[in-house]
Length: 105
Length: 121
Image 1 (cartoon, helix red, strand yellow):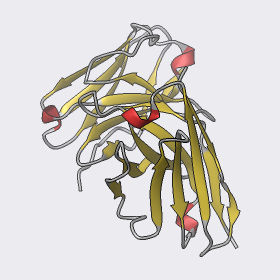
Image 2: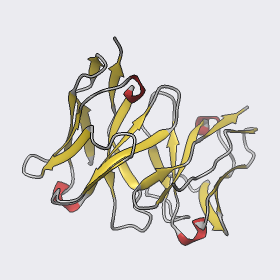
Image 3: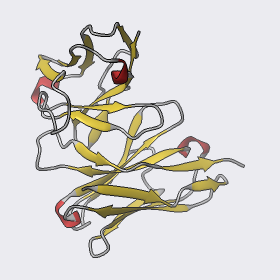
Image 4: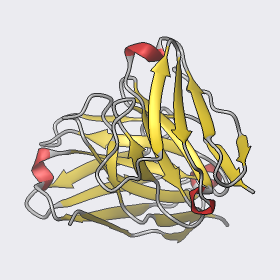
């Protein structure tokens, strides 16, 4: 089975840049989406097709991919960005990484 | 606006059954693949099943194959998940999602609020 690997946790200070990685075999041949999930809420799409933002998502959220690693970058991180973030690719079906808990403190 | 509203969750004994529903509105339901995704308490997201536009193609995670059945009624803008032979490890919030096959990578661009299935004796 295909696996997407994320660090369990990332910490950042308010106003700094947060980076969350997602790695997988030949991930560069797929397209990666990212979801934000705050406690008690449903996941919310913040990046699709590696680096595109749905309308309404703040510009401080960006995505990139290099080789087998995709990266979600949050510039000028705000306290309200504290959440779990999941990467997702498609490999015969929707597939999720294990999630990264972003702490802003 | 796009809305997905799940219902049908509850507390059920091991071996029991439930039928989850997802009512869709705000978009042309028959133009989208639909998917079920679950999240066990304190855990990550797990894909469960998806269904094609007309319902003629379905796929399931290995952990639920043979026990869960996905279906849809395009006339009623509704998605369903029949879950049988429930196990403790099926305890989770079940989300329905709109899978956008028109976008490479097939993101789940809209999610419902989820319905909780709890399996316990």
